[in-house]
Amino acid sequence: MLDLAGKRIVLGLTGGIACYKAAELTRGLIKAGASVQVVMTDAATHFITPVTMQALSGQPVHTDQWDARIANNMAHIDLTRTADAILIAPCSADFMATLARGGCTDLLSTMCLARPSMLPLMVAPAMNVEMWQNPATQRNVRQLKDDGIMVLGPDAGEQACGETGMGRMLEAVQLVEEMVAAFQPKSLRGKQVMITAGPTFEPIDPVRGITNLSSGKMGYALARAAREAGADVTLVSGPTALATPAGVQRINVQTAQQMFDVVMSRVTGQDVFIAVAAVADWRVVNASEQKLKKSAEGGLPALVFAANPDILATVAALPQAPYCVGFAAESEQLLKYGKAKRAAKNIPLLIGNIGHHTFGMDENELVLFDADGQIQFPHAHKQTLARQLITAISERLAPAS
Ligand code: CTP
Image (cartoon, rainbow, N blue to C red; front, side, top):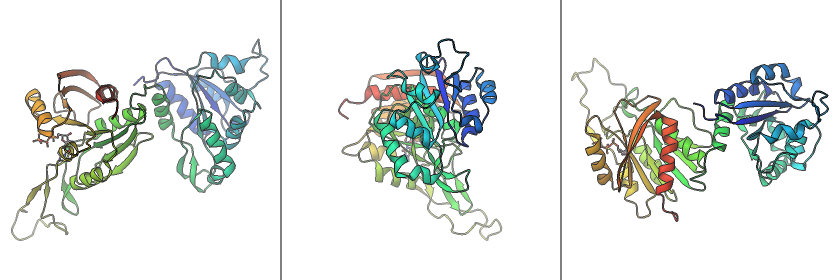
């Protein structure tokens, strides 16, 4: 998807082994439709060559404040005047310190200080865990945030130095997501949004169970879109193979009962609840603790079912219920069943999937049922539909909620 079509990004590289990720990041930004102008500090050129970055970005790389090729010698001004954002990735501890004190030690730092005040500046820290935890660095992080600079990450995990902890630079794909998010309208700023997604899995024995074909793609796309719109997002997810969208808090569950318990324990204070999960309507009450044997006496297993709680209906019935949104995948008569389901669950908004072959697909077509009737959202990528839905939800939220 060309989520960054027409955007001009200045990508700054500073000294750190995470420079190797900047190559993939450049590709990712360009693939999303952006143009990328690379600026490197001298230290960065020790980790990855300007030739590599020029080849990937398709533009000459700037490394020198005193570049004789630039007629007016004002690269630190000119580079940002037509830009839509600056991203420093990797951003070293030293470069953060320079930014925090407003230093102009090289082309990149001078350019950052000379940027127009409205131009977004994002930094993706990358450093050893001890460097990250050092009070001096933490002080600089606070200063950068106070100055309106967006700090993306870092992540925790294994580090190139062999140690483990906070300080890993976010992956290229996450940084592209963050860049896309920066350009989305903040229609849910400050709102708390909870989303259920994916299938549930009801065990029959320790190795078997009942599930469904939900991939989780629509729920994850909504989680990403809600977070892009400025919401604080909790994603309660059944088993899926999907990556957690950047900045989203994900809680994994397996069964419908677990999903119900997690939702009910955290729903207080939520402004919006979007139930996208394909929740199993029934669970097996006589699930076996041991694997069922084919050769067992009695032949075929006799499964006994009980109804699972209806998560959406329960949340909608709470005295201080959040704004509730449901989904419906019907195999027939969507308009009739959609309307009836909205009424039965007593929710303000229900989204119907047009066609029930949406499971696992990247694209979909939707119809919205609300108190005023129906609105159709034509065939599009699920991420595009998710952004349209988030806009529709934000428009329907009472200002005081
Ligand atoms: N839902 C839920 N908890 C359940 C069942 C469904 O929260 N135990 C939510 C789904 O996440 C979805 C909506 O209710 O947002 C409708 O789900 P669907 O399976 O289409 O409807 P059901 O209520 O289960 O009715 P039926 O299966 O008879 O169509």
